[in-house]
Image (tube, rainbow, N blue to C red):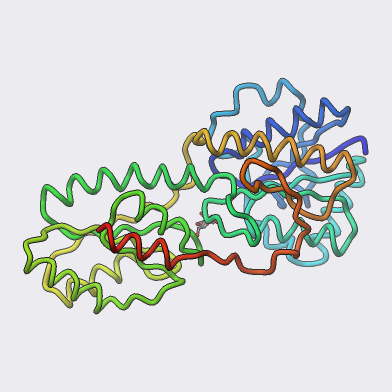
Length: 317
Ligand code: F6P
């Protein structure tokens, strides 16, 4: 193997992972091509050479210096073949993909359908990659959302109001659960657990009779919108509600130390795995040890243990 390419999505810690991949690959005698705008750039051949200097001072930057994009065309065979042709035209003999389930699904197609050497690095705020305990960017997203939530609490407490805060996570409730626990919230509504709004409303009515005056309800985007939850709570209780949709701020920001360190370990391990011919899977951390997991070996959906964290939230709230 002489030349590898690197393709990314965006979240906190991705630039730190780019740095680790490039510097490890260079140390192993490999040339590195950065793929601009994810699979879109892979199909159109938008590559830039990356060396040790091109990744200087990016370790603490949010987002991805390589930009990213959604590329539906890559889901079909002509797009996949165009991408392979671009890789071969540049003499690229291995690919590292940093991203979440969508990006890693693309990586798996290249590896399994076309036999191209690919190694994945899980990076997503949703933390929903099957078989992977922690993805790069998830801890940063929890901290960014927690910072916003703490500010919302100041107003919720001062004005004695009910706030419904919507967090991202696609179909997974992991991010919402972490934010609710870390923020000491009263309730969390998740795709994985059916807590009816009527029950939440009854709890609010009962709390209000005891003199409780403010609530923060976190809702995962995969369960419902904050607007729908807030209007149902108002309809059931007669209390005013306010909403906050945290949106894409959760995907931005400088990585936490946890994410930067994970990015260093996984970026290094992915470049080593490719150089050593261990491909067709992803690298991830089990504790502080890096493990290699073949694509598809972990099933299609990540299982998360919501029940014990949910019980804890209710005991403490
Ligand atoms: O997968 C990361 C994520 O931020 C999800 O939490 C969210 O549902 C989605 O991406 C938003 O996608 P887009 O940036 O394309 O709107």
